[in-house]
Each structure stands twice: as C-alpha cells, then as structure tokens.
Image 1: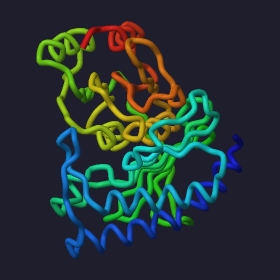
Image 2: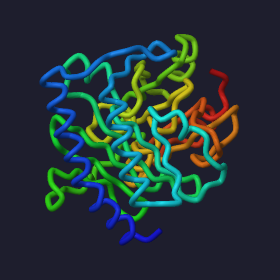
Image 3: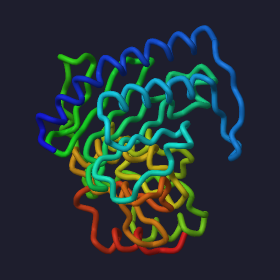
Length: 271
C-alpha cells in the first residue's frame, strides 16, 4: 500500500475519531454509561460496545472485503488466516480509567498489511489529539487534521533509560536487569507504555503476558514508524498479525540499537 493510500485512509478516519471523542467525553462527563464485568474480570461499559458498533459499521462500509476485528465484537475474533488487510479496533483502551473519570483512556485503530502493523492511530479523546504513524512516514502528533509535528526523538539504548516490563516474575525481572544492564520497571498496562519512549521516560517495552493484537498493533505501527523494533511471538515462535489468532504470548518494542544478545534473550527466555 502506498503512502498516498495510507494518507487517504487517515484523512477519512480523522473526523470519525473526533466524533467518537465527542461522544466519549460527553458520556464520561455525564456518567451516562453502565459498567459490567467481563469473564476475565476486567471492566466493560455499554460505551465500549456502542463505540465498537460505530467502528465496525464505518470501517465495514468504507473498506468492504477487509477484515475488521474489534475487542468488543466476539464474532469478529474469527477471521481467515493470512488475510491481506486486517483492521484491529480497541474502542476504549483503558476502560477502568474511563470509568474512574481519568483522561488517560484512548481509541486504538490499526491496519495490518500481510501480517505487519503498517498503520496505527492512538487517539486521546480528552486532549483531542492523535498520534499516528505508517510504514512510509515518521510518527506524527496531530492536534487537528492540518496541524501536526513530526516525532523526531528516537531513544537510544545508550541513553540508559529503564525498560518497562509486563508480566515478568521478580526472578525474571532480576535476570533481565543483569542481561540488559538497565533498570527494569514493572507495569500492567500496554499501549501507553509502548509509546512511552517517544516522551522519554523509558527506552522500551517487553510483555511476557498474553496480550491482544488490538492492544499492541496500533502502538507497534507508530513505534516502527519512529524507528523502533517490534515483534510478537506465539508459543516461542515469531508470529504475524494475520495468523488467525487474536493473542500473542510475548511482545517487545525496543530501540533500533538494542544489542543483539539482549534481543535474543528477550525472544527466547522462558517467562
């Protein structure tokens, strides 16, 4: 897919993001949503479902024949393996934050081409800004469709910033610190910490926990456009975002100059 095709899709998407943001801000401000619990114990609201329906309908009409997978649409979780174009949608990433009244929730939308995260959008409704990247341009932060700045900062391994790790036992965290020669910080979240190197507080992110593609595909596309290395693994083997699955059991996003021995260890060490 060409840069022009990605640009056309982004320009189509932008006003729909703003409309989704308007609805979410209003619902959060008025507390006009109902909260329930999923089988895995996480919170979900009827706003999640409404926004999922919104995106499934819009994307389905605009891009017929392309696979669309949304977190809140279970029927969409089954799709043909090796599909050329797969959209992943997380209508509210950070539902607990949304419920608590925090501004730190997001809309994540990605397009994976031939199994590679090639187009990623991270939209923050409360600030009405969009972090975007695709396989042809540097990552950009948009405050309107006509106003943006390129993200030029790329963290180097030599900067000695901490690596954020999800799902690692205390023993594994100690081993990682010994191999990386960097401090390791623990987290339970994904998208916000994957893009954190763009703001400077960390140098990379590694997850040893089962993680959904809709949580990582968009930030992975953004980070790759900023020069970072990302990868997903399933049962210890490199995986692709069009493999017929919706979960991986390992993910990493690390600087371009990460030492090879560290990359190998992160890919192969038992969690």
